[in-house]
Each structure stands twice: as structure tokens, then as C-alpha cells.
Image (tube, rainbow over all chains, first blue to last red):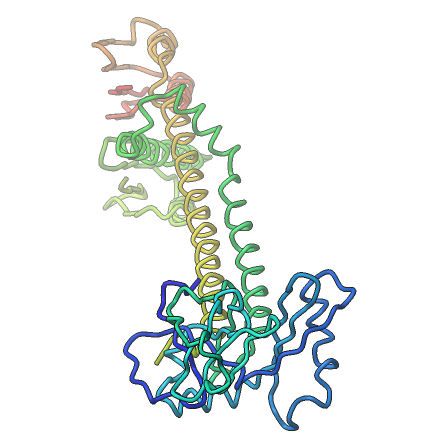
Length: 308
Length: 133
């Protein structure tokens, strides 16, 4: 990753640069301390754990050191670097953090240093005893004239990503922990959400079986039309029958039904009452049933009516 | 501003957004499921109501049952006319007992009463009845 970017060689005597695109940066040994040890460990992470103890007394006090460990045949190569001082140096040369994709160390590209690489008129990078070092050009023999051209082919596979820790509120560990918690909740929500899809099957199956038996009812418009039609009939007819039943209940000793009329708009009944008391009782029954009552002039007869 | 400077925050934020999306998905599923349940229940209720209403008011056996309104009363007192699913009947000189039996029968038949007109004449009753089903 990041190998398609330009590789910039950073050394203490470099000129200030103006970058438009982000670049990878390779640091010369001026910015890191290298130590090689043959350790009985199998994995890099195990070696990395003991890296701080290996550099005890070798590094300047007060530095914010990080470590990189690489395997070189029989030995482990430990690189200690102070990310703060590297950052300060790069920014002093116009290489702001946001323009740095990855940082590499010259030692990582050991195999690429087949011949000396000139840093400036006085210094060169050479590989001596499997270690990349900065040497005065004066120390190089005539046959060792710097001839190497530095380009992105020097880019190693692994690099250090500058995380801009100075402006970041969260450390990578915190961010990953938070992300893990969020993703866990996300998984739970998705799982719960997907479970809701499978419920209510019994009601759906019952509905389907009814649709099969009554295909005409599949359309809600059709259903509504039929429901409206029969609901109206049902309501009206029940009212008519309730009225007739209520009128039947008003017939007792001293009361005679003289007429009853029921049609599609309403109903009306007339009772002949033997006395005013009987008429009063009938009237009370009619009021209880919420019907309108009217006395027939010149008699104790009572007319009761209602609408549908 | 480079996103790399806020890489950690972006990772957490991205996961948070994914979580929000998942929550929205769950919420949407729950809501749509509730709506679907409601829709199915409504449809079921509606269909059952339609079936029940049709069973009462569009019963094919009503045509046979309606004949009872003619046979219940002596033929001499009945003038009966039936066309398709409509009946017009006129009853004359019914006693209280006969009127009682007739109205009870009418009330128990699932027909639309278009007209029920009862008039007392002396000690007997005359009835005009129209219905359809």
C-alpha cells in the first residue's frame, strides 16, 4: 500500500521542498537507531515487546520512541525512532504530516543499496556489513563513486503511518475499541431487524387461505364495497327489529296496538291506552328506548316514532 | 485538512454511522412489521366480517325459508306475490295470535323489510308486508 506514491529521501542536509501530492518518506540512519540481535523468538510482535529493553542507555533521554522490528536471515533488526523529532524535522523542510503517506527506514531497503547513493556533495548512503549507514563521500574509494539513482523502487513493503497523533483525540487502540463496540451493536441491530421479517406467518397463512377460498376478496376495494353494503343493511335491519321488539314490550294490560308502520326510512306505532297512567307508562318506556312520542289529540292514545 | 490526521476519529465515526444505519434498519423493520401485522389483521377482520354478513344477508336458504310467511297463516287470509327475490304479501283479518306469530317469523328471517304496515280493524289486524333478500 502506498507504493504508487513518490518516495522522498529525507536526510538532515536536505533542501526544503514544496509538495503538492502526498509522498512516502524514507529516512536515513540520521533519524533512527539500529540494533541487530539474534533472539530466540519466532514472531515480530514478540521481538517488539522486548525492543525497549534492548535500547536501554542507547537512546537520548526524553524522546518519544517507537520501534520497528524486521527479520533479517538469522537476526532481528530493531529500529528505534523518535516520531516527534522526525515530525518536527519533516515540517521544517516543508513536509507537513498530511502530505506524508508512510515513513520507511533506509535499513528496510538494504538490498536496494547495491552501490553508494549520494545524499549531497559531502555525504553518501552505503550498505556496510548489512547495515545502511551515512558516510563521508571522501571515504569512498574511486571505484565506489555514488551512481545509484533513488526512486520509488526503494519502497519497502512495510512502513510506518503517521497518525497525526498531536491532533487526534483518540488513540488507535481507543478508536478500534470503540469501533468494535459500535460494530457489535450494529450486528445485534441487524440480527434483531432480520428476525422481525419472519414473524406473523400464522396470520399471513390464514389470510392466504381465505384469499384462496374467496378470490374476490383479494381486492380491498371490493371487500370494502361489500362490507359497506351489508353493514348498512345489517344496521338498518337490526334497528327495525329492535324497534318492533321494543313495541312488543310496550303491549301490556290496558295497551292495544292500533297501527304499526315500518319502511326504509323509519318506523311509527300508535297505541291505544286505557288511561292516562297507562299512557304515561308507555311514554316512559318509549323514552327509555330513545323514541319520540306524541299524544293523539282528544284521546289517551300515544304515537311513537323513530328514524333509521 | 487531511483525513489521515483524524483517522482514528474517522474509524470510530464510521463504525458509529454503521451502527446508526443498523439501528435505522432495525427500527424500520419493526415499524414496517407492525404496519404489516396491522394490515393483515385488518384484512382478516374485514374478510371475516364480509363472510359473516354475507352468510346472514345473502343466504341462499332464505328463498326456502320465506315460504313460511305464506304457510304460517291460513291461505284465505293471505295474498302472496313473489318475484325473484322480492315478496309482497297482504294479510287480512289476523287474530292477535296470528299477528304475533307472523311478526316473530318476520323478525327472525334475514330479509330486508321494505314495508311492514299493521292496522287494527275492529278486533282483527290487516298487514301489508314487502321484503327482499
